[in-house]
Length: 170
Image (cartoon, rainbow, N blue to C red; front, top):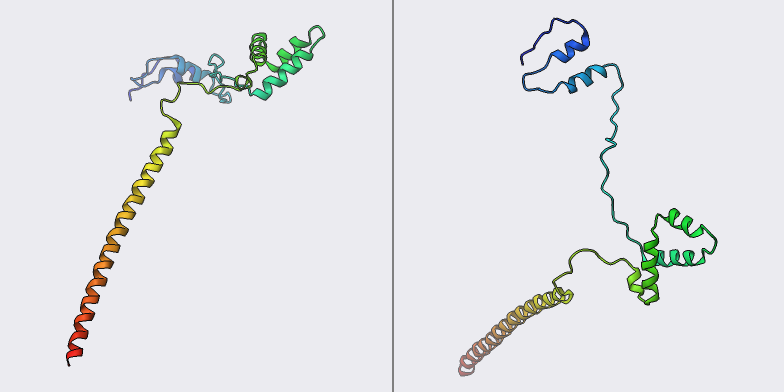
C-alpha cells in the first residue's frame, strides 16, 4: 500500500488523503472523516421499498366484510369500513358478484400458478403398483420355499423307506 501525503495538516484532510491505490472514490473517505466522532448507527435506505406481498382473503372474511358493508347505511360508514380494512370498492363489487352467483368456493382464494399436469390419483396408482410388485415377489419366494419343502419331504420319505426295508430283511 502506498501512502500519498498532502502538505495540509488537518486531520480530516489527512484521513481523506491517505488511501490505497485500488480505491478511487473519495466520498467514502469524506463521509468517514466527517463521522469520526459520531455514533455509527445503521439506518435502512428510505429509497429501497420492500417487496409487497399479495394479500389473500378467506371466504369467511369476505362474507364478514360483505355483511358489514351491506349493514353500512349511514353516509361515510362504508368508506370508513373500506379504509379501516384497507380494501377497495372494486373488491366489494367482485365479492358481491361471486356471492350472488352462489359460488361459495369463489369467495375462497384460489391457488395461484400453473395447474398441475399430474393426476392426483397417479401417486396412489404408483404406490399400489409398487406394493403389488413387492407382494408378487413375496409370493414367488413363498412358492419356491413350498416346492423345496415338498421335495425335501419326498426325499425324507424315500430315505425313511430305504432305512426300513433293510431292517425288515434283517
